[in-house]
Image (cartoon, rainbow, N blue to C red; front, side):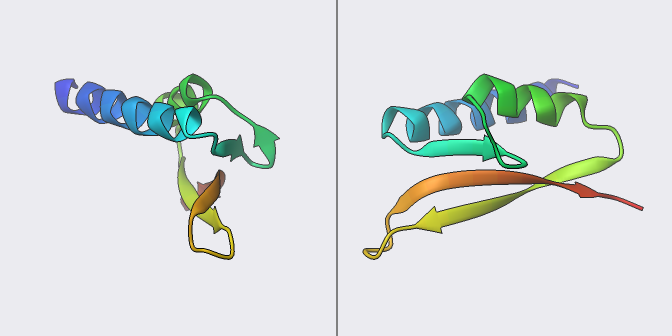
Length: 72
């Protein structure tokens, strides 16, 4: 369980850096904060989240989207 907590803390830190850089984040098309995204990862049952990086014309990340992917 400690390994999962470390992973969630690392994810929160990473997403907070994106947020501070002005990068928008969403879950399934809805705006989301780093805490909301980490919470969604923690409570997922039979699904995972896939990241989708949206970049500008210079290749810089401008948006980070998470989409739920069902596991069968």
